[in-house]
Amino acid sequence: MWLRRFADATILAESILPTRPEPSSHRMKHDRAKIEEVALALLGLTRFQDGSVLRAWKGMDWEVLDGLFHRGWIHDPKGKAKSIVFTEEGARLVGEFQDRHFASGAPADDTTDRSCDHS
Image (cartoon, rainbow, N blue to C red; front, side):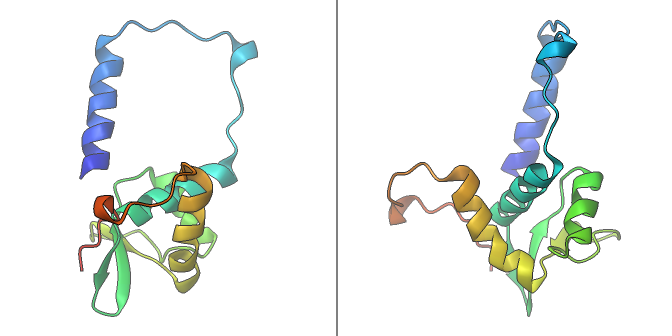
């Protein structure tokens, strides 16, 4: 839910703030593999146990979700469900990618665990 609020706030800010085009020489090509790893890590922030499967809400770009599906990290995201199901490999990689992309170097504080475990 916080991710959707963040996205909505970003869209609102972009519509209000003046923008100037970036010179094409300053634009960087995005690394699709890195985007998909971070997407999986972000999905892991909203993960919850649903019976025998691990799920997360699928409020992400469909192309990114398709990429995660083709990598074998989530089951097919197409359908009416508002959540995705992690594969075993995807569930295993969530923590690794979160550590790789989001670790601050400071030891974890058990009192501020925000893993969003909705089991």
